[in-house]
Length: 274
Image 1 (tube, helix red, strand yellow):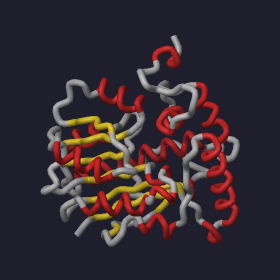
Image 2: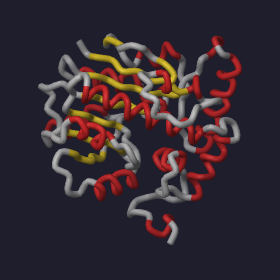
Image 3: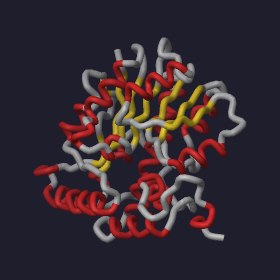
Image 4: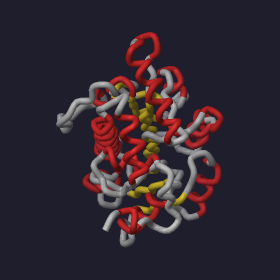
């Protein structure tokens, strides 16, 4: 039986999904022919797409482990969490403290269906339907349902989500509104598609080519400049080593593959709210 025959209700299998393309890059099975086609089109420009997906996941693991083990964070809000896969936020956080609370937020019906099935009996982890483009609605849900205690520090994860907000979605405003709701001592982790511009013209040309493919197939995807991405952190204190290619953020030797074409076109960083 193919995954196409068991798609959850409400899942559109005729259009590619960001979450399912990412799932395909990670070697998952919760994707459809249309998602694989979109992924292959992008891989014609950057053949190391799967390695880029793994680098994103490795950055998630390292940043969450840092926040839980070193920064003492016990609440995580993962917006744009995507489909569940190995090394989810709650699994990493619970290695440090089984009572750490994790709230996953996504607007993809398939991600929500699979996440809720996976976490049906979970005590400290919740999957919430919500749209990052409407931060006030999302924050109201979190407060009303008492899913996050905004009087205690929070680890806000905006990983591979802001680059899927178009400029007219005001991603900087979204990040600013979410950060404003966090108490002092909270942290923000961001990973984002990056266009290095004149500093690396060949890489920049490739980034623009992939951006064109993404927008033609997925209808979304923005490779932004370093200054634009730094702007999402606002006046937070960016932790060393700063905003860097994912593999360079506190590496721990876990990665068994190296990105090539995409190495400088995805960056990440973690910052603290004073």
